[in-house]
Image (tube, rainbow, N blue to C red; front, side):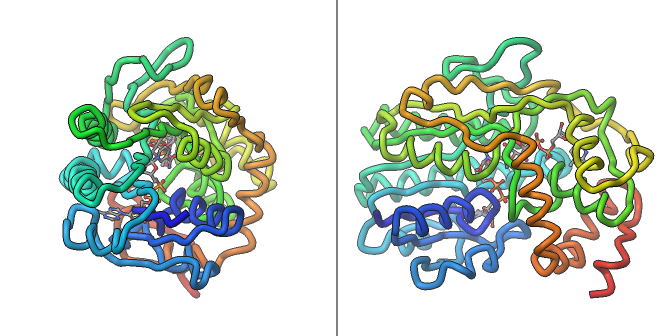
Amino acid sequence: MKLLVCGGAGFIGSNFVRQRVQENGDDVVVLDKLTYAGRRENLEDLGDAVTLVRGAIEDPVKAREAIGDGVDAIVNFAAETHVDRSISGPDAFVETNVRGSLVLLEAAREREVPRYVQISTDEVYGSIEEGSFTEESPIVPSSPYSASKAGGDLLVQSYFHTYGLETVIARGSNNYGPYQYPEKLIPLMMLSALHDDNLLVYGDGLNVRNWLFVEDFGRGISHILAHGAPGEVYNVGGPTESTNLDVVNGILEHTGKDESLIKFIEDRKGHDRRYSLGSEKVKALGWSAQVGFEEGLERTLSWYRDNPSWWHPIVDSADFREYYERHYKRPLTWREAASR
Ligand code: NAD
Ligand code: DAU
């Protein structure tokens, strides 16, 4: 296929592009603004199979340029994605996640793109104490991030109903794996442990997340791209539900570090207690998760251990340091990284 992958230089997008190039032989155009979270290096190994267009999805000229003579499908990963950043500064989230989705949808309609896949999140359903969300669960987002993702999803549905654009929405649970920007729980805790620094856990650490290895999400998205019914939503949930404390203890065990590194800090505002995503609908398309949490955690840790040249420039960057110090109200003291 010829694919336009928006946000393809980020964590999940770049893993998806790698899978499509290596396993399907696709020709991929990536449209990416290269924000702090997007990196050219994430696609470096893929050579000529990938063309990177630097630009924002909310820029209609760039969107048309990226579609070029036409593509078989648009897969939209582009988003502001970190819940904590959305709490301290929600504007960019509305601009990219809502307005950006609208501009892309309009470009897809204008250019008669045959298929549009929106990458969304379980967070649009809000928090659930018991049981699991289905695709019919009400949309009750809690944070500016999840509200902006819900806004994007509703626009996608409107383009299906109003214009007959062939849309599908893939809602994933918490992803982890190689190339994840170290502001998110798993890579941040891994790098903190490797630097013998505190693992900073919000609240009581008993919030539950439904962990999905990034390659499994990619395979789910490919199933939905190929077989999803137009206008439908598909949940793609991970095989494991864990409290944050269990995840952090697992990381300490895998790194051989002591529990005393755990430090409980002030809770996230509006912190969703539990996510749990039922994935029967995508399983009926032939998908199932292949990577268990223990294996995924080990593979992720090995990747961060083996690729300091990927994360050193990030943790040494002004953006990361300023964000870390502002958000955690403490200096980042990873001397080893700082000295590179
Ligand atoms: P990420 O933050 O690692 O990557 C986002 C990418 O989008 C970056 O390359 C960034 O440069 C690009 N981008 C941001 N604003 C842009 C804009 N205006 N125009 C073009 N490009 C822009 O995010 P991720 O974790 O890879 O998430 C990708 C998608 O998957 C998002 O839509 C997110 O909501 C969704 N999602 C993420 C998770 C998760 O656990 N990380 C789970 C479910 C769904
Ligand atoms: O559920 C899917 C969502 O997962 C995606 O839509 C988001 O883009 C993605 O960022 C992620 O959101 P979360 O808020 O669940 O992920 P995060 O890694 O930020 O946090 C996971 C849990 O760990 C959450 O309960 C908050 C907690 N946490 C996080 C950080 C960064 C800590 O206790 N300490 C931390 O330092």
